[in-house]
Length: 348
Image 1 (tube, rainbow, N blue to C red):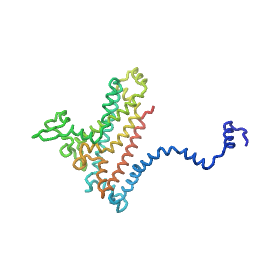
Image 2: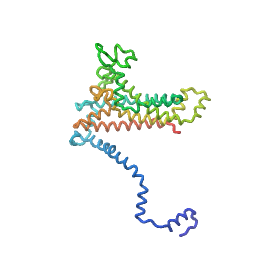
Image 3: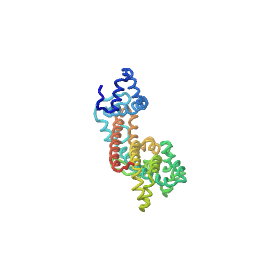
C-alpha cells in the first residue's frame, strides 16, 4: 500500500482499515440495529398516531367518496361526489344541520375572536411585564380559565346572558342586561329563537348569540396566549427599550415598532394555532346553546355538523365529506396565514 502524497490522517485511517479486525456480517447487523435504536423510542407514539390519526384520516378520505355509505353495515352504492353535493347544497332533509350555516358561523367565530384575543393578550402581557409586585398573582388568576373544562365553563358563562322566568314571576335578566341597562327590556342572548338576528337568504346571522360566543372565545383563549407572549417578552433585550427612550419614542411607538416585531414569531404561532382551534370549535357552543346548538343548528359549527351526521348511520357519508372539506379549508387558511405572517415575522 502506497502512502505517498497522502494526508497523515488519511494514512492513519487506511492503516486502521487494513490492519484492524474485520467485522463479521452478524456484528455489522447488530451495529446497524443499535444505530437505529432511536426508532424504538418513537415507535409507541408512531403506533398510536397510525391507529388514532392516520388510519381515521385515510378512512375518511375513502368513505367521503362512497355514495350512500351506511355507517352501520359499511355498505355503499358506488363511488362519486354525491356526498359533497349534498353537503354543499344544504340539509336536503338529511339530519337537520346546514353546512353553509355551520361554515359561516365557524368562520365568523374564528376570524373575529382569534385576532381580538391575540391583540388583548399582547396588551395584557405588556402590562404584566411592567407590574413586578403582583405579577405572579395576576398570572395565576388569568391562567385559571385555561385549566377549566370548556363544556362546564360554557354552561356557567351562559348564565351571565340568560333571561330566566317571566315578568309576571321572578325574572333573572342576567348580569349583562343589568350592566347594559336592559332590565326592563332584556335580551335573551343565548336563546336562538327570541334573540335578534339578521336573515340573509339561506343564512341566519343571530348576532346577539354571536356576541355571547365570541366574548367567551376571547376570554377563554386569553390565558394560553398571555403565557406565550409574556414568556417571549422576558427574553427581549432591554437595550432596545433604552434606545427608544433616548430617541423619545412614545409607549405606543415602542409597542408597535419594538415589542410587536420582537414577539412576532410567537404572534404568528398563536394566530395559526388559534385559527386551527377556532375552526374545530364545538364544546363551548354546546355548553352555551345546548346539544343542538340552537333549535336547528343555527349556531352550529363545522365540527358540530360532522358530529350530527356521524351518528346517523345512513348519512355518515355526509360527515366524512364535511370532515374532508374542513380539513382542506384549514390547510388553505393555514397556508395563507403562513405566507402573510412570514413577511412580517422577525426572528432573533
